[in-house]
Image 1 (cartoon, rainbow, N blue to C red):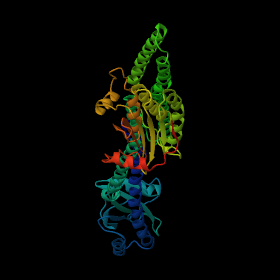
Image 2 (cartoon, rainbow, N blue to C red):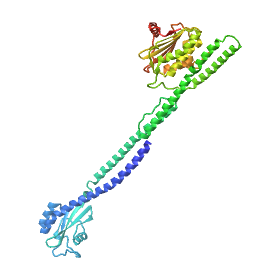
Image 3 (spheres, rainbow, N blue to C red):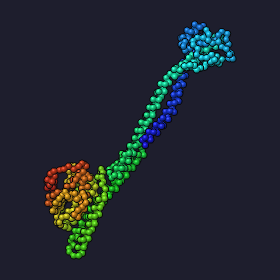
Image 4 (cartoon, helix red, strand yellow):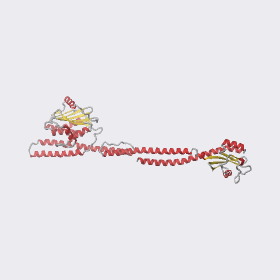
Length: 474
């Protein structure tokens, strides 16, 4: 497109320059010719008054010398008694009554006398102006003024060179302007193409600047709107996949706990076997959904939720199961709003995944707690229990990043990790003050990567000991 615009501009400008420069060059040449002959007419007119008064040779030579040059002007006075009207075929020229050098032919001079009006004639090296002048005797004298070719073309070459330079400048300027316009049109189009390629490669944050001509601006707006819609659709799909733990695993956990209380007997065993089979099928579905879901961008500006509200809501759900199993539980730090840049569904799915693991992998009666710490640049969510702990925390985190083993899908820790890393935070597994496992979720508030904080465990413990044990339940 860019070179096409340059070629079109070059062709159009060249045609315009030729259409105007050629006629203008011819006009300039004619103007130079008219100027040269106008000067010759003024020189001839300077001699005419003297001729009308006298025909004395000496006086006329002085007049010719003052009016022009002997080499460029000549005066042809007819011989005494010569006829000078139309139809007279003879006119005495030359001889002692001629002044200056004659360049015109006798026929041209005679024709001017016969016509009684000025005329020009071509001679060697230029042209001559033949101007008739009436004498006091009634006869016709002819003043001849020589106009060399150099005077006729004086300044024409320079004017043509200037015209050529102006035309070339116009062509170069038009090509430069067309090139800039082409760049202005091509660059937005290239950005649109690059954005489409990036989006096709899975980089969902690809957007196109809205710039350039109106058509490309509208195309960029449409592309960005489409990309936002794709991101939204994929985010919805991701939320559905991550929410499988909340929608499927949570009811299954309740069902498994209820099945465990059925006692012995064939019906009870069949029920527990069916629950285990159903749990395996759900694990398969969850693993497949996790492997198939795409990577999406973190929540945009303005997205987020109240972490304290979500913690209270999810603990209200799990507290019923805790009371059935005789588990002690408590919540700390959720008594006032805590805003975090995480979608409500993501945080709820993460809490359900961790609390579901507590119920699934610890014995009945094992206590657990959820602590919420609000800092200046980060929010920390601690989920701890009084179980036996995790022997290899690194292996557990590795399982969360890949396919599950040992009957675990790894989805719980994977959901938590993705949620934390979307804010620039991280997830750590360690030992809790209750004696079991503690999962620490670091949620960064300003989008920076969470720093490695040594000695964090002691600081958390001190803050935990100093915090009022509000909302503690059995």
